[in-house]
Image (tube, rainbow, N blue to C red; front, top):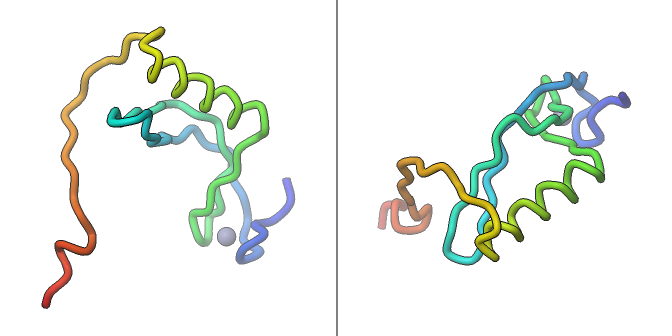
Length: 83
Ligand SMILES: [Zn+2]
């Protein structure tokens, strides 16, 4: 694996969580294989992985797959800004 294209840092192979929106639903995909930069945390996925994630999110949108329910909260970055 080549070094991080953002900072030149060393990459390590990890399983990560990817958060996506399918319409109004928030989908958390767990155990996604990725290369993660040890220095800046940038993530890189293979094309196959990206396609599979998009496919899963689409299936959730079409209600073809059942999701496990988790607690979720939402924060608005701008609303939390002072002034
Ligand atoms: Zn980096």
